[in-house]
Length: 194
Image (spheres, rainbow, N blue to C red):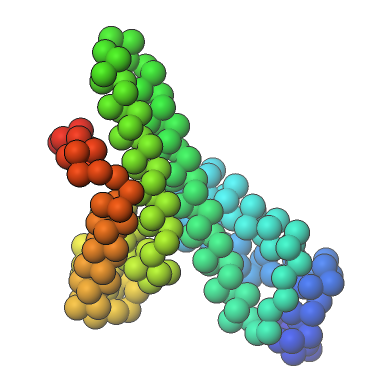
């Protein structure tokens, strides 16, 4: 950060698109955000693209931050969300490719797979409705396959908090899925998942 500038002056320079302030901002946060994105995506090229997109969004939105902490939180949350979008997109593409790569699927099997894909999209939408902490713990537990101990250590939370947040997230998702889909469809989905 600029030694001669206060935090608010520095943030003002970023808001006015000062090139030196932006260079410092990128130099300061790019490496850490890249490691963060790469840990989520496990794909260095996609991580680089994602982090650059985050900085582009910040520049285009021309947001105002009262303190550097808000800026840092914004960068990390936006990076995480963009990474999750990349993961969703890759999964949807993979699902579509799998659906259409097998020419010997019957029409019923194809219909079931399409319904399953649609349901997954709806589930992902519901995951986005979770509170930020629940969503983060849910993603770490079920998408990144981290244990409760790993999540607790990573987020500096107690094991009980992790368990409670996971339980609350699952309860919310179960209720949302039951509202949106009839029981018969839920059974079909469960059978397809086996």
